[in-house]
Image (cartoon, rainbow, N blue to C red; front, side):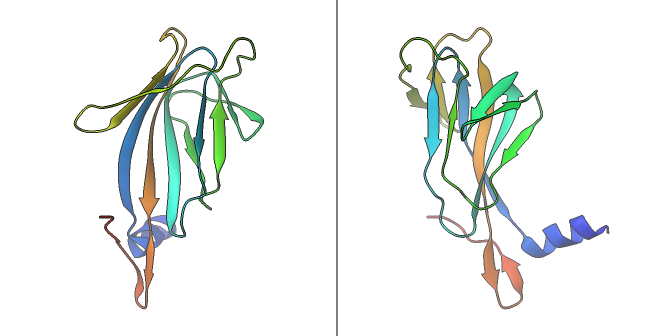
Length: 129
């Protein structure tokens, strides 16, 4: 087993996928500070560029945005004209779908969190209720 695989086995993270986002036009989506042991992530399914925390990132399908300190962050389109479009939320029985604006050329991503909890023997999984 390589070192990274061994480390991940010790940490034993639990993962949740809870959002499927499709944003077009001018949009914004933010996250508050996460509690200790929670690491939010975003997997890009379709995009070219994304503004995260005021910085532009060039992205493509398969890229992962990982915020290891659970830092608050704002993701937004690079479109600067017009009003910020409202984001519609709909639970589809598996994940919450978030949509704003037209689908053409939109950003599409899956979002979730990793959960880590320390124990005296290393790390274990903590189940959220």
